[in-house]
Amino acid sequence: MRKGWIIVFLLFAALRLSAQGFFVEPALRYGRHIPFNSECPVYGVDIRIGRQTDGKKHWESYFNYPNIGLDFRFEHHGVNGFFDSDNQTTINLGNSYSIFGYCNGHLINRPKFQLDYTWGGGLSFWPNYGNRLISTPVTVHLNLDFGPVFRLNDHWDLFIRAVFSHASNGAIIIPNKGVNVLGGQIGTRFFPKGRATLMERSKDSTFHKSNTLYVLNGIGVYESTAIDDLFCIGNTFQVGYTRTFHPCFRYGGGIDFLYSGENKAMYAVNNASDRFKTVDYFSLAPFASFDILYGNFVLHLSVAYYIWQPAEYLPKGYQKYYERLSFHYHFGPQRRFFAGVGMKVHRDCIDYIEWTVGANLWKW
Image (cartoon, rainbow, N blue to C red; front, side, top):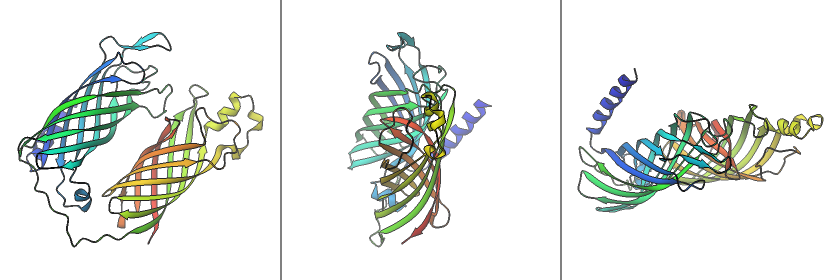
């Protein structure tokens, strides 16, 4: 069955690559784990299949005609394993297999030279799991890279990149140290049918600044940091405002009304269960946000500060502020509805993965 799916995918990829602007991109990677153990080398291979955008959609030309597609990544983590200095043991991470969507943009886009960046997110599979770094067989995989691209001709590119990747399970199961890899990559990009013909941005296209009032609900499940094998629910109901000041950018703010199921567990750990009240589940925090718009797809970044937190005992790692990184896809009549996934972070540690749905209530 698995071989059948591989054959179907290869046939699909071959058909897509036969069109102008589609490409295949093999690359070799070498890196090190940071900050835990610099002696554990990482060897990897990436195969990207993608499409050069051509400007048929307005956002493509505004972002300098980025490449979008899928990355298939294989990594081998260390020959002698990863030494865990906390427990004085060796962890054999072995191999990992990742697949993620990406957007490869151009800071500089010249006829013979580009300066590129890439961001992407997806999933990783780990056959050797069940340790303090990787505790589940499937984790989130995040990728960032940056570097020059040299255009050799209409069919071939050569590139060099600095690459950072992160894998963790989003606190679904503890421990969740995760794996960070920093390294370099060298590879080539091949356009079988040549590059796409770029369309210039229409001078007749008009953009109108706009304001939007929206609501969102995000929910996640995670293991308590205080009690083993206790799974909790986190939920955020958000009322927000955005100001779209550019076809690809907007800022905003609003208020988060939050629920944390772990708060009750913290009272039990501190032998204060009799003092816990229902209101201690909740908190309130205003936030400021900035969004990057890729057509219907939105990258959302925000920072928030608690102004009301009645619980006396809070989950480990909580501070007065937190950050949020999420991805939303807008759909429906006039892109009124959206859904997505993201993460809420305290002190550089993820609280949990949020699955979100929302609606734009009013636009003017």
